[in-house]
Amino acid sequence: MRPVSAEAGELGTPLPVVPPGERGATRIADRVVAKIASQAAREAVGAPAKDAARPYADVLLAHDTARVRVHLELDYPTDIGARCAAVRRHVVERVGALVGMEVPEVAVHVERLHPAPGQGAARGRTR
Image 1: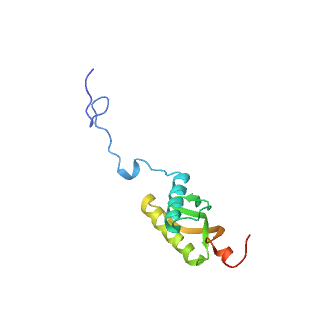
Image 2: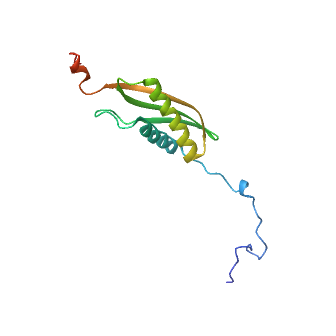
Image 3: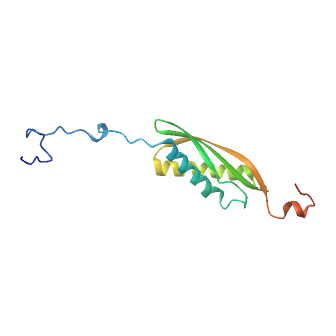
């Protein structure tokens, strides 16, 4: 048995050189992008309320674009519009940086608002 060099085929003929763009493609799973988007939403929201669920994301991938839907819970009172805009910006930035995908759409669904501790009792209301 004789050794075959990296530049030679089975019979000693040189292997064809395939350009890098034609060698294959890297496919990133939907759930990986969804986990990155969920983590980015957590980073943007900050520390959640004591009984709040962690943010999670649903993702729809098409070629090099990702459409993201983030579900989260926020403290109340807060500027909901500003917090949702911060989540959108951070998700677009992190998914673009880590995965290299364009994110043209981030829909933020606020599932629940949590009153700040002592808010309801201070006004005499309980629920």
